[in-house]
Length: 243
Ligand code: SAM
Image (cartoon, rainbow, N blue to C red; front, top):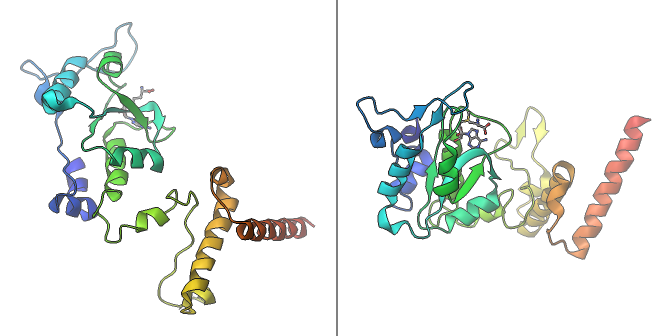
């Protein structure tokens, strides 16, 4: 599952160009005995299985070897700190990271206590395994690595990028689709007007959808004024709508 995703599209190309190297390790290869068992029943009873600590410790220790210094060992768990663009940016600064994907009821607690140096959740829901969460982290981090996207600046303009805002809306051809026209400004050829339109629409969109994101966003006096006008117009519309 993971190798197919990691081998395609932007992540596949990032690996071809050596901007990124992902090595997958099958926990079963580190399990002992004829059946290479990686899970067992929980102490204290109850349903479900728990991933045994020994194959996980051995996998991480043998993969990272003595050069473990400074490499974050990240346990994917719905109990971890919430993943975000800021966390992706933080992880993109490391030369190497190790991700542990759990299954069943999760991993033996001693992995969390004595092996993992970080725990990440991709959201407040529970998936069947840590593979998709690990791929999510790899994907978001890869986009931020130098040289991976054609235009390096593109990630700064994305939602949750440097501006802290949601990104402005995008349009492409045709100019008129089913009577829905592209905003005139975007086809005006006036670069300054287009930039202003984009900034204003990023502000409007963020205010409407994620006002919580405004904390920490720097707005110029002109932008504050403009936004106040948008808010007023919106409130006037709301009142009209409710009459
Ligand atoms: N019993 C665990 C709990 O309630 O916290 C959930 C175990 S979950 C079914 C199995 C594995 O999927 C976890 O060990 C973890 O690796 C992964 N997983 C599930 N949801 C996740 C999430 N939101 N974020 C990160 N990893 C998740």
